[in-house]
Amino acid sequence: MDEVLQATPHRTVTRVGDTVRRPVHPWSGEVHALLAYLERVGFPYSPRFLGIDEQGREILTYLDGESGGAGWRHAADEGGLAAMGRLLREYHDAVAGFRPAPDGRIMCHGDFGPWNLVWRAGAPVGILDWDYAVLKPPVHDVAYALEYVAPFRDDEEALRSYHHPAPPDRQRRIGIFARAYGIDPDGLAEQVVLQQECTLDLVRRLAAEGVQPQADWVRDGLEGEMRARIAWSRRYSRRNVAP
Image (cartoon, rainbow, N blue to C red; front, side):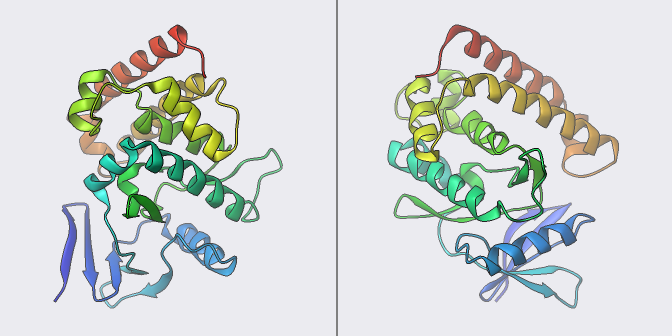
């Protein structure tokens, strides 16, 4: 029996046996090429692209484990945090040969957060939702992840929404992620601000093109919330130095 994994007007995701069926977008061809490349180089943490079904949906292999909201509590744990950093570095090393740019940019995942990982026994074992893959410097993915796993949110939101058992030591967590990834944490707080500004520009552009869910986000006032988050991150980066 088919199982609906995500039911939204703009993107219904369905499990059919050991496969996942998702809508196709104008950028899906590039994503399929990326997934095929990762399969060729033996990267084990991405779904495999199996083709297009009779309803015009892409067919991907199903990755078994916890995902979505369940990822937050795993990322709040320092072991899960470090595992995320190692997984991101493994992905960047694997993708380095896929249409690299001469200026050092690579095909970043673009949405590397706890909700888009598949978790088993507290460790990430798969990466989902490649629709926002984008040619950027590797630090873009690092900063994007850190916004959510440091997290660059106030203590109240970290406790309420991000499953932290106590107010997080953000500097320590930035250091854990960065060292697991294999880079110096110095300057990463500033990179988070730059990434947030880049993401806001992307949301505004997609909304102007009528792409969902970004069009609804802007209509519902998310732009103001994103600006407030950028301001919080900017204040944090000015007050603190990386560990």
